[in-house]
Image 1 (cartoon, rainbow, N blue to C red):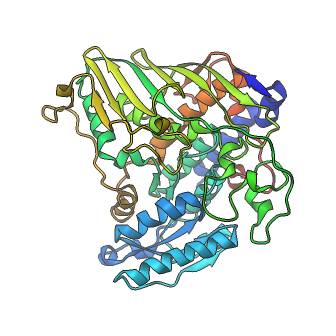
Image 2: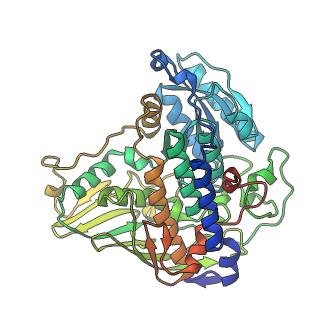
Image 3: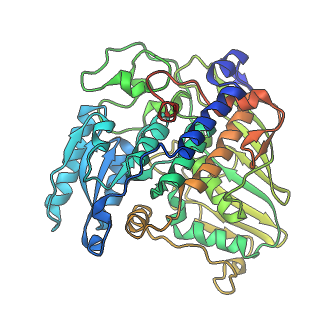
Length: 474
């Protein structure tokens, strides 16, 4: 059953919190920060004159597809750090990750450290000789694990999207600021040459005043629910659910038990909001970078979307159209009907940017299998490299940039305070898609204007004993 332009009222109410509860959550974090009750740790190994000669000691939390194919190789190939620990709730994936790391060390000239394994991230974070962690869990675990990590004095590489809700994002952003930890979010388009160059061109006025931006994102199809299955003995399923509601186990809901194919949790709103945050977190971040709105966001948002029956396991959005208005009256259209990428349209022409290649591992439909040019323009002269008035920070590899900043204590290229804002714009778009009526977002207060139904979706109820709000209770 398809429900166009809205979710059922029961679903919206059940998934959100009241405006008062949202305020209480954020205020609780603020009170804890103001009271100085949050512990601050700076690993001794990173202090002193000898620190630059030390290889950083890193742990991997979450050992699934994105970790195996992207995060673990990124850290290992940087030459700046050693993996010394791995943590996962699936013992089979835990063993695979440990073996992947040990194979790398056998094949390289780097002395192999002992790689310890953990099933409880809290035990891992308690290790005093650990400098930093890479968090590659499903989205619904991002906020709690990342908050616990920075409070334990660990620097963090956090896979996108930053958090599942705006309320979580505010709390986590403020924890990062207070503790001074180095947090890099996996918006790796900031470390890709054509995206940086496109943003430099736009911000330098190459296409004149920007009037419109078109952003294309793919969608995920649904299918009927699989039946209940026995929980595999290698999976701690109750803990995997975390703060989300209890639900019966089926492989369709979690991840493949054999291989590392696309996991089902990406298509269930309990664990992911769909492509509007899955891919949106990348393209909205590039949008904000190009428009110089990294610490603000949109105003009016109007959206339509198709959603499967919310009781279905694969219930993330299908076809959709989102129209946002940004400062300067820039109109932004986000739709599955546009090619996957960004097209900036101005008074003097247009500039197009996307990733190279026709497919990616995280995407079921990348431009219909067509390889589009990674950088293009209405006139080739718009892409001239001379005469740019804006030069943006440069990073050749996202994980390496993070590790360099862990050493230098400089802000990385995709920090928490910026990632939170682009993620908030994605979530606000999702809220407009769910409600089916125009909303007005106030970037200053990080609330909607005079819209209690929209505000109710800025946070979610959390199943005890899990959730980020239990870290801020005072």
